[in-house]
Image (cartoon, rainbow, N blue to C red; front, side, top):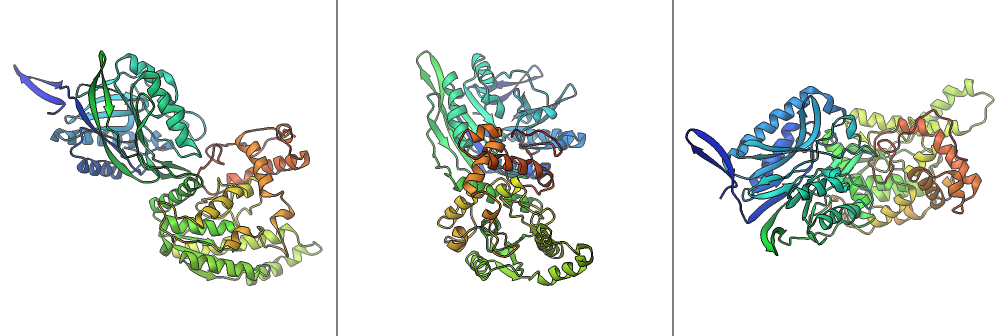
Length: 573
């Protein structure tokens, strides 16, 4: 029995909804292609062919156009095309197969809305708009959309569906309003980016609260995949009104799951309950961080149609873990590593780089930079006369390496991967137009202590989405030896920076938590050290503004989350 039956009498046609006691609702946790509407439509139709026995298929937020669309959404042509494609999708449902809930952009009275459409019986049967528009961190939806009114439930096959959209469930008003109007099942479509510990917050801190508060079960559908600086982890789920997790879909992979719902008598009321389904274990720390870096790099490279990647492999931990991430993302055949030794490069580093490449199964070429360094020394000797060598000569080496790697990228086509970590980027210990060269940086939001943690983990584990080897990916010595840029004799990072556990703790306070120098000193850190780190953090803003994109991992990544002026005079210490 279909839920939408066409009746004819006296020359009049009318659609009548028929009540059922069982619903098959398919949750489609998909990747996306921002702006490629044809690809997104094809992916949704492919799911519909796979789930022909479903009554309703649910897709993530703005799945038709991709999320976040940013200023693409300001192009009238995109909005017009989205409207046309949605109508085409709606016409497909005239075949009597599954209805669809599709997230897209809508125009009402000249204003743009982020919304969801119920496609049923060959038409757009209903639309609902997002009420709570997030405007913090990575989100700037108030720049593009107007909020809709508090939504009403949608009647589907006799079931009253509440359709809150993403941010709508992070506040109680929308779900309470829907409950008061008779909603029986919440279906929440989302574009919720990954952030450390966010999966726990979504389920325990938000979804369970809404379900328990209203007594209504909630199905949460999230997308998966990388989009520039953010990555979506999926991990869609269904929770019951008592807070129990009825279904938990996997993280870090596309997944299509059909859930079965039954209407049952509970006292003096009918209630919908979902049959218990598979409850997948989600990736724990630090695997979740590693998977975020792998998926973000994979989608950035593939969606921008690069044939592969190239990176400098120095024998240090940052480049080694970046090589491992690249291999897990793309496979060893699409990763090209290059050793660029100078007169200061130790034999230990040469051996460690070769060992890492061998473990990963990647191509390794060696291009000594000595001839170029000598050429620059000779070229600059007349204007540098009377000056002692300093940081300038160190930066020249880094820039020569950057030019060399970019030459290989230009000549053969692979994207250059940047390998600097967040600790270095925070305090400016990176050379602009040198080791900062590249198209994408998997470590941009990873502090050095995080780099150590994921390297230790990857050396004894293989990620669920990895294409690399089962065994170790780098010699253990790379992890344990003191970090060094090897740009001068016997150089160590500790010569000019506090130990990384101290540095990262101070940076967490300054960056993630916006604490003052006084507040951090009160936690037991030396004032001179904290004040110096704050000064370096401010001085390096111009470098970070010119850095390549990199995946967001924590609460305040450089770029989308933390947007400081380059020129300002405020200091807290």
